[in-house]
Length: 320
View 1 (cartoon, rainbow, N blue to C red):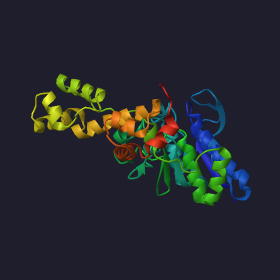
View 2 (view 1 turned 120 degrees about the horizontal axis):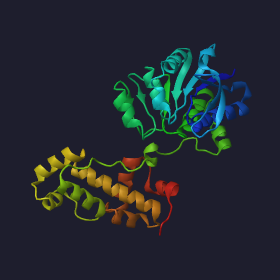
View 3 (view 1 turned 180 degrees about the vertical axis):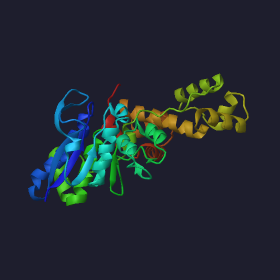
View 4 (view 1 turned 60 degrees about the horizontal axis):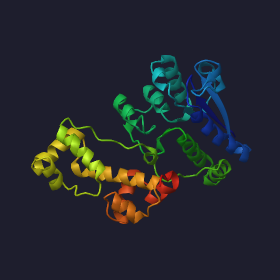
């Protein structure tokens, strides 16, 4: 029996949010015709729907979708914010979700699920750039910005763009076993399980800029001198404060304790060195102020859920 997958799109959607999962399900159907999937696309209006990049797909009107649905999957895209006020679209998603065995979203399609009330009191993820906004807008949603996808009950959400492929492979594995999901992944030349979370793709997460000029200058000093003595006593001395007062003011104005800020700054230095140089790991650890390869590994795993070596293999572009 084929499982019916309905993918919801709208003007300005992200094409990969739709095409990635559609190809996963379509490939599964080719490999296992008797137990595969039938993919359909629906939108607020029937006919051609243009993605953000200008490519158009043909969709059925949401109001014309009849019968039960196995998987309702909502795409994301740059235009999602302007569609959050579309009561017809949000109402249609809520109505279709009630007829679906499970519901899923790709990227910031999670906002549409949240607006429809489908993520209330559930863990969910979205693109790392949008996670803070999702958390701010929808207080009832427990947002986790790192996983590539999250399953909470019958609702699945995935992170940015191509993580829709990771999500779809997980759904295939759940429906038909890992052997079929593995064969689909091999056919599409992708990982069945990508190591790490989406934080490995994110840009540096800066702390707040302090209001105090001395602390702003100190922040710049920390970032420019990762190998210096950046202990609390040394930093407090540079700005002429007691250690206790310095720690309190720095944390209040940056949102991070001095120790946390220093570790993050050194971790970012290490990440850049891994990406743009061929330095061995002990040199990266020393130049970034982390000291030893063991500390470098531990900090990298804590911040980005992957090892320094794995990060270098994925992102290295040598400058020197």
